Image (tube, rainbow, N blue to C red; front, side):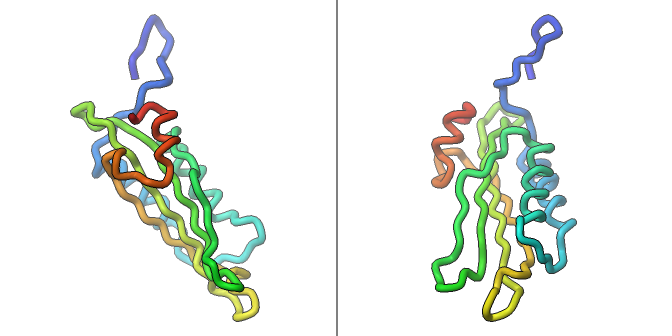
Length: 138
């Protein structure tokens, strides 16, 4: 971040190498390796908050359920932006998937969670493209 007379310019992107940001984000998902049961998606909410502690501009840009009569998963898509040490703008893309582990009648009554983390060129991000423009990655 650029400092100007004790003030920090907040609109600049943070600096990370691809390996470091992926490692930090992946370490969050490793903490959650069980089957969960709650009505309010507490585990995905905690993961999102933890991700925002590492990269403050990470935001949920899309959610979806599968399209069966009874959904068997819910997904959250998150994106954020950062600079590499060489000043290349990059996008962080995260997909959280809560897969149903409940009964046949209510598959999402219990769920396990997986987290996919990718670093991409911003032009390769399709979901969340507008948000990346908003935070200055384009």
